[in-house]
Structures are given as C-alpha cells and as structure tokens.
Length: 217
Image 1 (cartoon, rainbow, N blue to C red):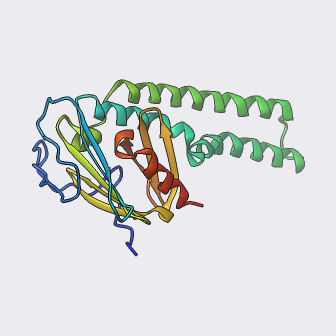
Image 2: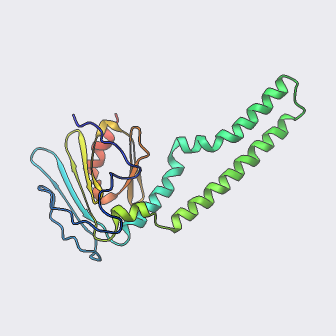
C-alpha cells in the first residue's frame, strides 16, 4: 500500500529557491539522461524483470507550453466545470419557474428561457476568452517543473505510479485516479481529492497508460 501523498495544485511540493534549477541526482533503474538546458528533448523507457516500468524525460523549450496548453483545454472536459457554468442561469430559470407556479411573478416562461440562454451565452463567451488567454501564455507553474533541461522520471509498479520532478516526488495508486485523459501530446491525471496535473505523453507510455486506466475499473 502506498498512501496518497498530500497534493499541491499541479505538482508536488516545491523545495528549491525560485528561479534556481536544482540538479536532480540520478535515480537507480531510470535510463540515464544528460541534463543540460537547451539540449533537444531526451526520452527513455525500460521494463524491468518484475514487470515495473521506468521512464525518464528531459524537458525542452516547448514542454512547459505543451502542458500549459493542455491545462487550458482540459477545463472543457471536466463535468464539474461545465456544471458550474450552468449553475447561475439554472438558478435564475428555477427561481422564475417557482414564481410562475405560485402566481407571484409576471414573467412569461418564454422570457425566462430567453434570459437563461442570454446568461449562458455570456458565460460561454467569457470562458472562451479566458481559454484563449491561457493558450497564448505559458503558466509559471509549468515553467517551474518543465523548464528546458528539467528532468521528469516515473516508476510504474503493478499498483502505483511514483513520479519524480524538480519540485519533489509523489506517489499515487492507480485505483486513486478518477480521471486519465490524453489531450493531444499531454496526459491529464486526476487523483481523488485533487485538481489533477499534466504530464508530457513521453512520461506516460502506452503500457503505463493502460495500468492507470485499468486501476479505475
């Protein structure tokens, strides 16, 4: 059993000083990678005799943007986010309906439906603008963990994912993930009770992806 570690939004607890790039020691079992900013991305994956999977990835100057873009798009795939958009117009519609039923309101049902769609449309436009702004920039929380030369490693056992990044290490059992989604060239993972986090597809090969999804069955 590997208890789920305390979760910090996005990634494990940051331990180094802002702006400083810590040198990560080589972890036994992971493919050795050179770790120099500005080098082309490097990726290695290997399977052990015990069935576990080791993956190592060195970020390039595009990795943080990939993760930031994926984080902006994933909001459209989360049911909780979509229900939040419907909450305010649904409340207004329900309130008007109650007024009609109790004969205490003078609004027609058609007018209430019109107001519902006007509010929903306004919210939709706001979300599109916010998403566009997020797509156009790179979030600092991703440059802190996926800047050029930063190294990410993962160790997949039969029941647990162990993730090591520049900001620390975290472990989660496959059964604890409630969402595992591939969004283009990144993967969104959401353990129970967390906001979820993004990883490059290179750090979640097909065999590991099957284990993550299988743990939710």
